[in-house]
Image (cartoon, rainbow over all chains, first blue to last red; front, top):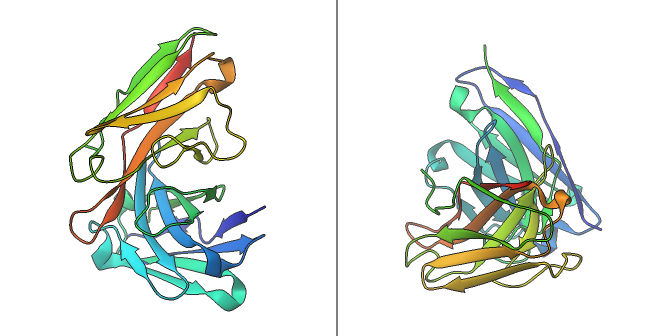
Length: 119
Length: 111
């Protein structure tokens, strides 16, 4: 059974960098496409981007200029860095995994972690 | 505004059939698979339907999906109280470099 667990600071100051890591257990990180998805409080879902362990990456155009997603296959982890954050980046951040590239089918989800941007 | 349009709310009584719609453009829903997610209160979304009409293992056959042209639908038959949740459609948008997009979500109430 594939399990995902997000970790990282719950509070980030405006203009600083939001950094989260997702640890994958029950599966090799090499087998899937790994995404970050966020949900502002009381709002809908927004796809942030995905990465494949061999380096294929795709970002949401609206976040691309501030975004870096990377993978560490040795640790079975992938990470998110979003710089120059503002209050608009306050959200639940989920890591998720799927079988296919260019797909909005996310078969596995972490429980999510709340990140607040505030001074 | 979401790229995919869903009604903000829907409702039904136990045992009824409810349908939730999702509409989009020809280069999103028209070209790509539609997927549906169920988000119970306080939990992460769960994949309910993928590739328009396929159910992952473990999803009851009360849930079904369909797509026609630039619209898709999620149907829930034999409505149960535990179906009360938010439902989201999602698809791949081929514009720019390609990215995943979600509908705004439909809050389903079981009366």
